[in-house]
Length: 320
Image (tube, rainbow, N blue to C red; front, side):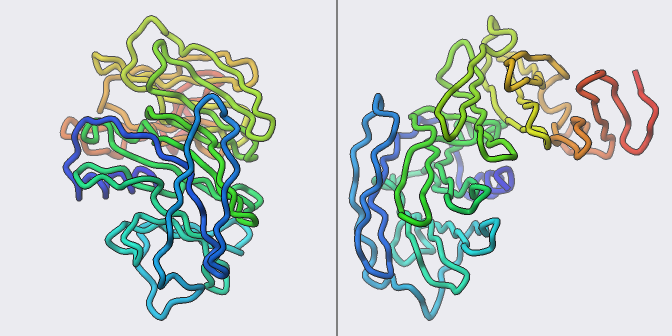
């Protein structure tokens, strides 16, 4: 979904290199009562974030005769809630907004863009990340392509936050001004992330409930990586894979054990020659070859991360 969202955004807006400003947690309004709920301050007290109160539009009521068109919609796992994200041009408030509605269609929470929206382009986009497995929290963040779309999706975004659906409290999960890549484990208990600001590059594994964290320098730390991201947890949650890119356009696919933090290079290749498709259900890594004109072709293969054997899709015979 994030890749599709980036592609659509890049087609609409000509992007240029720029550094986003940090977003601040905001007052969330329960539209049924119009009672402001002040979110808890971030547990990351070393990074102070002032609160900003944003008053919702007066026509925001629990139900509408005409609903704005969301560019992104995500239902909670239990089917009780739906999160909708809107461009400022499509929402009555005139702001980029995320709304949470219940299954009856009533508006429960509204999260406006946190700060002053830039008047020029490109501008950051407030988007949905995912629901927690128990449907109690919604994760959201901001995206801003750093360099005109050259593998920009390797960075997920910045200022990952979560809202408690019951209380409306907003807390930072991964605050920061720089670009990050992040992915939550299948059990919803851990998050793997990297930060553009780290030189040499570091891979982090944080437990979302205890706050404990393990770190390791990315393999080949002497290299000047321009990107470290595109993180994927294995279906079992026992392994993590991510991508690196150097200044000379060499890409590595690296396997990480999130307990021992040991790493292993699975594949090294030139940028735009392969496309990493992700994990298969049986725990292999799948790649698609890319033609010289940048089009993905049908030559797909998988790699067994334990044996390093390479298989053509649909054939059981390893190839050299």
